[in-house]
Amino acid sequence: MIVNNVDRVWKPNATVAAIVERDGRFLMIEEETPDGLRLNQPAGHLERGETLPQAVIRETREESGWHFTPRGLVGIYLADRAGSDITYLRFAFAGDAAAPESAVALDEGIVAVHWLTRGEIAAQSQRLRSPVVMQCIDDYLNGILYPLELIRDLR
Image (cartoon, rainbow, N blue to C red; front, side, top):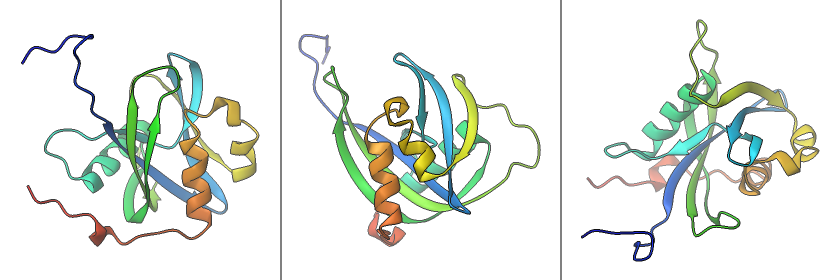
């Protein structure tokens, strides 16, 4: 089936995000986007053949250089991108991260890696990639953490 912009079949974009907290600070990346420089958790799209945990481990490494170990699922978020017909289905994982052993080449468009407090992130809310970024942090801080066994890969 050939799909063009007029007849395009709608489907959500499956994404993953890593929530990493150390000493009250969260691992954040600063990235170039079509809307300018934005802050986000290390996050990205699920690729064919990956499990959700594999995707969040890969994306965290590619975007921040840190080695992420998921401990649980904070939440599943469905959000539309403002001004478009794009919908994101985000799986946010909380976990631990180990620093890179050496300098790592980060994904194109990543400008910096930051460790920021919730207050510092909230003070820059206009620079967040989406409102989901703060919602994930607040859900994590409210103690929401589902076991990884909640996710079943039946392929």
